[in-house]
Amino acid sequence: MAVTIAAVEPHSICARRGVQAGEILTHINGHEILDVLDYQFYATERKLILTLRDAQGKAREIKIKKDEYADLGLQFDTYLMDRQRHCANKCVFCFIDQLPKGMRESLYFKDDDSRLSFLFGNYVTLTNLSEREVERIIQMHISPVNISVHTMNPELRVKMMKNPRAGESLKIIKRFADAGIKMNTQLVLCPGINDGDELLYSLTELGKLYPAVQSIAAVPLGMTKYREGLTELTPYTKESAAAVVDMIEDFAAHFLYFKGTRLAFAADEFYLKAGREIPPPDAYEDFAQLENGVGLWALLKDEFDAALRALDEADFPTRPRKVTVATGQAAYPLLEELARALCEKCPMLSVQVAAVRNDFFGESITVAGLLTGTDLIAQLGGKELGEQLLIPAVMLRREGDLFLDDLSPSDVEQALHVPVTPVPNDGGQLLDALLGTDAPDCLSIQSSERID
Picture 1 (cartoon, rainbow, N blue to C red):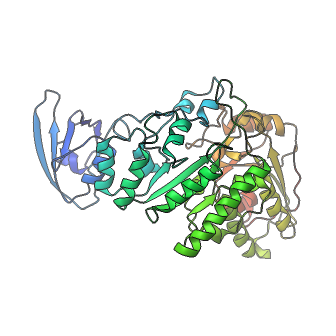
Picture 2 (cartoon, rainbow, N blue to C red):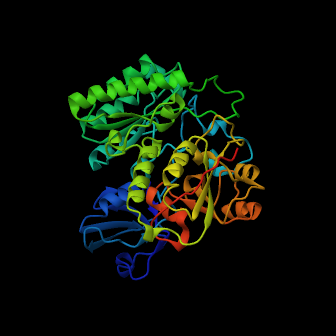
Picture 3 (cartoon, rainbow, N blue to C red):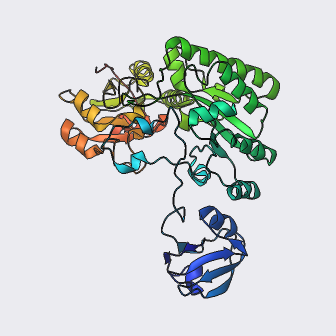
């Protein structure tokens, strides 16, 4: 397999050498080019020999001298330069299997592509990784690789993922460790299945592969109201979530004593379900698992508090301003806490914090990232929202234009008659957004009331 060149940027290195759109790039310096990883890895060398083939199959070679990271100017039909890999597993906890019908088609695609792990931080299971791809990761020393492990028990992994390769593919983790490939790992935990003694076993086995395994995240399964015909599972309770937190913290404390790092971390959601206080920022070390919801709360609060300490009266708004912050039920207590801490700072600013219930997927889903435009409209409609509605940017897809239910921010604006502003999970940017354009780099809140 080779890759077809879709376009050549004008005045680029390859344009000057006469490379044409429609030609097929087969090799760089004798190395076969199958996708974006091959291309990016081998194209960094200063001296290149590109092997090209035209539509009639005639091959030619072009020699190029360039700076190490200079762009060749070649464009391809897709970023990966071939098709995105589909997941071959049928995990009992899969969230995509719990989506209602009628949503946009892209939401139902299950990716399990090792290239996306390296390029964008996606988590992969390794079950559809070919021997060539394993060897390539080792040869190119691609790090880190983010791996959805779930359990280190091979038989249990087969049962949980309903894939006969699921247990065998655990051996790849050991091969990566032996080759010095860094790995971040996650365990999506299901009560009574892969927690308890099975969790301790997984932590222990992954711990043996430190420092190649550089972090372990324990994340609770998500359960929507659309589970007809799926494996019967139960959500975490306060007691079972507390048991997970205790096991993770005990393991982490032991590992910290002997190795100097905690290695394993429980997701914020476990602490909230257990009614436990979120650990301080230094307990999360380098925040390696933020994408798994591990340490988000602590980091946001730390950033916010730092910005608050930097405030002085010259930063305060000079006119009355009222805004509303909409968030999930899980994050509401944090924003409420920040609101109460800030109420003494800027008397001209009033912020209303709205805890939005997830009716679209079910009340057991409490994170902000899974809220929809429909829920915002239904629960905030008719409320006095002030001059601006702030929402977490994670409510929208990566392009920032659509909620999960295909409504856009402008749809919500029209329904609620208020401007909608997405805000990243960053304490400093949250400060700026709440203040608006009339005052720089600070936030103050006069009052906060919950909207049910």
